[in-house]
Length: 63
Image (cartoon, rainbow, N blue to C red; front, side, top):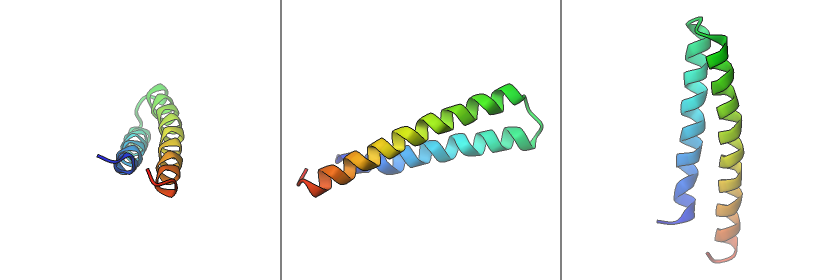
């Protein structure tokens, strides 16, 4: 399995947490839960960007 296969997984994780946070907000759920989910989203977005950068670097350097 190549490192670039992790890119869709990382992006999917961000999307899932984003949707869960939006659903919680639209249903009038706990603001603390929405806040926690949005913090997770930001962290996962950072991780996804790092994974994408590494995948691009590896592809450019023959890895």
